Picture: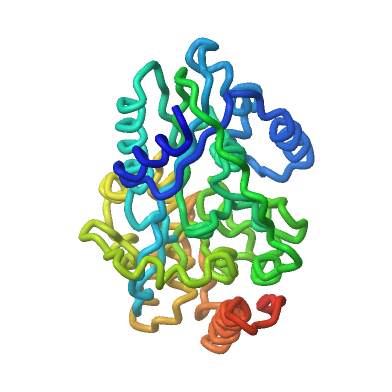
Length: 362
């Protein structure tokens, strides 16, 4: 099958970017995983990093009959409301289950291609980013994300491994150049080594970690209850996405923001069931409620702060014991941080500076 034939079928199925590469080992990626794991950069994350002898070897799939790795990207960017009073923010990719949609479309692609195939989406058995890079979908940014030409990094990635031989697509010969906006915008310095993420300092990691969030990072979470989009918001490759996606509408089941008080009041099983697209350690909703507590404390919403009272003397090992006084994050602090992040975003616009002030709180 030609690369053009593959692209035509993918377009019919609603896949935004697609490419193919031979099913061969990702030797360099495997080496990087082992080296970074040795340095402790993954913290306690497992995922594709746990067994690189599997996740970096697509040629072993399909009982060794795999010939082609088809990579696909689905753009998830859509305009949505900012978090209001008493609300917490979800990252854009988690507004709905985009991975489920991508998985469905890749399965349809496999049926159209024929032969034996296996779909891997958000799975531990395959490093989707490396497959996508080899298939020409994008390049690695200094924020470690895969950046596509048209949609930037606002995409979820998935893979279809097949025994059908497909013409390879050429890798994308692009990079970040001298830009360091994502590095400068990260409030915790998680990207200080370009192209390498230190999970120990990553806000997104800490919203998912089954451990206490370090005190110095708690105010930096702002009103985010899960994940973090800062390094994507400032990326110049993501500039103009609102124009290219002008026709994309916020679907009914999308959830950009959540009521923090509701998250705290909800039964744990109900909360986890509604947001089953989120990774929650051991499906214990207390980790989500922990994030809601920090977001509520950071919000400065005096009307909602009373809901923090039951947790000020909490002895629960998961839910944080909050200070007995007012929220440690003042409105001035929040304004300073928000202004810094807006400055980083403006710097990404035409004529903007290539660097921005890293708005760390004192």
